Amino acid sequence: MRKLVLLVVLVLLAPAATAAPGPARTAIFYYPWYGAPARDGSYLHWGQAGHDPPADIASNYYPSRGAYSSSNPAVLAAQMREIAGAGVQEVVSSWWGLDSPENLRLWAVTRAAASLGLQVAVHIEPYDDRTVASVGADIEHLHGLGINDFYIYRAADFPAADWAQMNAGLTGVRVFAQTNLPGFAAAGKFTGLYTYDVLSYGASSFARMCAEAHRLKLLCAPSVGPGYMAMAATGDRRIKPRLYGATYDSMWRAALQAGADLVTITSYNEWNEGTQIEPAADRPKYETYDGAYGLLGKEAQRAYLLRTAYWATQLLSR
Image (cartoon, rainbow, N blue to C red):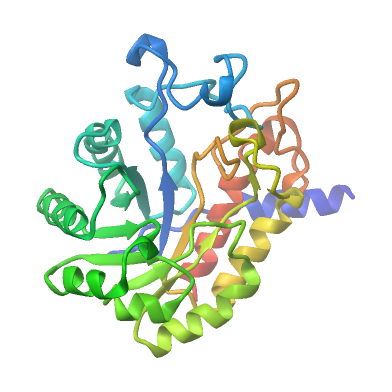
């Protein structure tokens, strides 16, 4: 047993993949929406569903950093160091429109990421009054500020023909549709597709999806994740168990075997849905990462970051 644990630790501690020039091969969904009273006046996203931060938060897991603020430069810098150290090349920042707090924080994310050689993309969420035309204007605006990759969540909210008209007018950007239907993405003239939802779209769907995407000359960017548990935040009783890391491994393995052009990771820090790989503390009444890849205690808190570094290296060495 000791030999097995030692082997797992040695694999986890393999050097992180270095960022290659050109388009990213690994990207991770990142949420800059958390707040704390000292910096933001109140707790943001930690207190939903009647929870009372900082001891009681809207997550089944508890972050090692506590109920932090995403506007804290020290937190942001440490998070970007973790992402870069995990071999990820692109940070996909959740974005809810020009008037949103996430837009105001985007530039801090960009600065912190750039200092470590990380690219930054934007995850365009279903903000109020979102239309295809407004998304097109958003992309042109953000591209003018240096953003080149865009991920459209819930792309199927609008007809493919409308997206095709928008995408035909864009240059110098990659635009990905969140869908598992390559035909829809091709009809919408998207660059590629990603799945994001690791609960609905499992490893078994990747081979079919990527084969069809490649036949249609699309980039295939399936989304992998460690699991899903959102009961504390939303009451959703559906769970995708982590299985001590086996879930994450199976999704990564399937993405590589499917010939993914880009692997997207759900997520770095979506604590409300329990898909995060950011370090989690060992606190009473909260889930932990104990047992993941044979690690326990303090070592287990970083288990998924370490494993991401391993898989990112495998992707870049193909």
